[in-house]
Each structure stands twice: as C-alpha cells, then as structure tokens.
Amino acid sequence: MEYLSKVCLNHRARREYMIKISLVGSVSLLGVILAVYSIFIGNYLFAAWYFAAFILGLSYVIIRINTVFPTYLAADAERVVLSVWKNGVLPYTLPEKPTLISDFIPERVKIVEIAMGDIDTVLIGSRKYLLRNLTDEEYPKILKQLDKNKHFDGILKRMDFIYIKAKDGENCFMSITGFDINGISEFVGIIEKYCHGVQIMTNLPKLVKLRNSIM
Image (tube, rainbow, N blue to C red; front, side, top):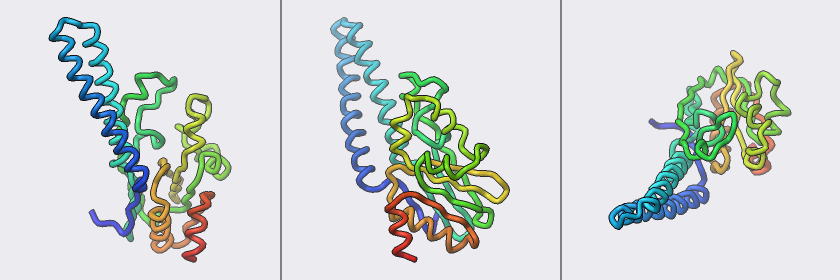
C-alpha cells in the first residue's frame, strides 16, 4: 500500500538489532547441534540445558524481529495508520507481575487506522510528557500499570511515545523509541497538511528543531 509518509526504526537501530539477531540466532543453532550431540552420547541432562537455551534464544530472535520489522507509522491524505504491538509499549508480553518467561513471549501486532478528519490532538514525547498533558482517563492504562512496577522504570525512562486523540474521545498510542526522527517530522507534516485545526505537541528537542526549521 502506498503512503505519503511511512516511518519506522532508524537505520542505526535496525542494524544493531540485526547484529544481535544474527549472533543470538547462531548461538541458538549451536545449542540445537549440541543438544543432538548430547543425546547421541547419552548425556541427557546437558541435552536438556542446550535445548532450553535454544528455546530462549529463538524467543529472543522472534521478539527482536518483531521489534525491527512490523511496527511503523504511516499516513496518506485520508488516514493515519499505526502498526503497533498490542500492548503499545514493548514487543513481549506484559503481565501484571513480570516473570522470566513473560519476557520471552513475543507480543502480537495490531493495525490501527484513524481518519484524518477525526484527529484532534497528537502528542509526541516521553511518558512524563504524556502524563502532564493528558487527563487521568486519557492516560494509557498499560502505562498506569507499568508506572507502579519498578521493574519497568528504567525502560520507560528511555522511551518516547506518540499519542493520537480523536475528536470522539477515542485514542491510540505506541512506542516510537528509536524511530527515524526525520521520518516522524515528515509524518507530522502530512497530518498538519491534511487535518486542519489539529493540535500537535512534542517535547522532543530534535523534532522541535526540525519542525521549526521547516516552518
């Protein structure tokens, strides 16, 4: 499908993830080979450990592929499209209580579409920026849940989000951590062009600088 603007992870982030995927994938493959060899020589305990390492490594690879490829922001003259993890924050499941296993279960991806004429406000920034500019009802429930959990505190501090509020009160949001900032600026420009009266707010210095230079 053709879009006027489509933005995803920047090249540097994609390259780093691909290197990690390649390394972990290679180690996981080695784990399978060692597991088979251990079974062949009758060492079943080591075989079990190698196989478990393979499963964890494979899960990591799937999650990182899920990080690199499926999520994006896109826009044309009529709508905005978000391809986003179902929880909106991270590419793995987020239970009420974090567990080792949950960190290795890939999250599903969903597609959200919003008509240009329905968009009221777009916020782009950190978790704290959203918290300052949204009402308690508007603030995403998943972030409320994670805010109470110290396990995710360090992760959330390094994350940036986009939050789109519709005129009917509906909203959607997603993590844009590592996204190409020039692409985000272009995406915002498309919304400004085709959605008259939209309010766009951000606290990302690089994005503010880009938008000011364009204006």
